[in-house]
Amino acid sequence: MSDLPLIQPRAETVAGQPILRALPSARVRSIGPFVFFDHMLPHRYPPGSGMNVRQHPHIGLSTLTYLFEGQLQHRDSLGSDQQVLPGDVSWMTAGAAVAHVERTPDALRATGSAVHGVQVWLAMPRGQEQSAPSYRHVPAAQLPFSESLGVRITLIAGTGFCLESPVPVLSATLYAELQLQSGATLLIDTEHAERALYVLDGELELDGVTLPPRTLAILPAGLDCLLSARGAGQAMLIGGGALDGPRRMNWNFVASDPILIEQARQRWALGDWPRVPGEDERIELPN
Image 1 (cartoon, rainbow, N blue to C red):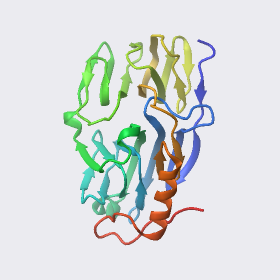
Image 2 (image 1 turned 90 degrees about the vertical axis):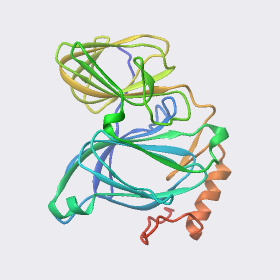
Image 3 (image 1 turned 180 degrees about the vertical axis):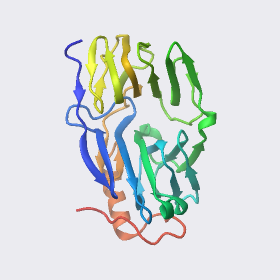
Image 4 (image 1 turned 60 degrees about the horizontal axis):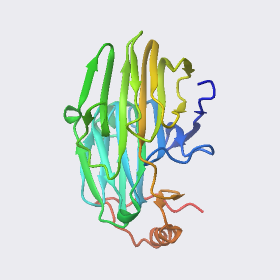
């Protein structure tokens, strides 16, 4: 598998938080329902500071935030106000219109804290893009996992490896955290049509091909793949069924119809949008 496609994510900064953005890329626009993949790099905030992503809008997607370290406070225009801890799933479905904020909780802002995690966006099925928004928090203890022969699989969303997550996904989805001890192997089968593997750290190989840390490997369709650990490693496995048609992405908006995106841009610019209770600051529409 010497021609295994490897995506090098681009470095960006969001509200002071350094990230690596693997999706979308020029080579691959989506993997299953996943249209966006941000690795929030390990970052320490000194006392008096923290992450502060101000009020901003979404349509046509579900966001999923998963932390390895730190805490975030999720607040949205539905009235949700949820503290997100490591291993929890913060799942927000935008539908026709939602707004939210994500920030370091006040207590940690006072003392200083670190953040490390991943945020992904999943495109909603075309027939549900204009549905009502919703929010679901799933504590870490409710996520299914398996542990055998040096491999721990935590199923974050969807189905895979004979596990099923309680996160209410809208289409065929595979999203798992993989932790392998040195010498361990894991067969990744073809249950899902599209699959990709993002290596967080460690010495991992896929069918004998070395996977550099912080890269996204696109797995070949229709083939089982063997993941091997020369040293301890950690990775995120994403996938699912192919999208039911192309998607447009513009700023924080995802839609199958560009008219929906233009309408959302105009509404946000005019202030005609659901508001997060108690929030006055917002991110303005970029040019």
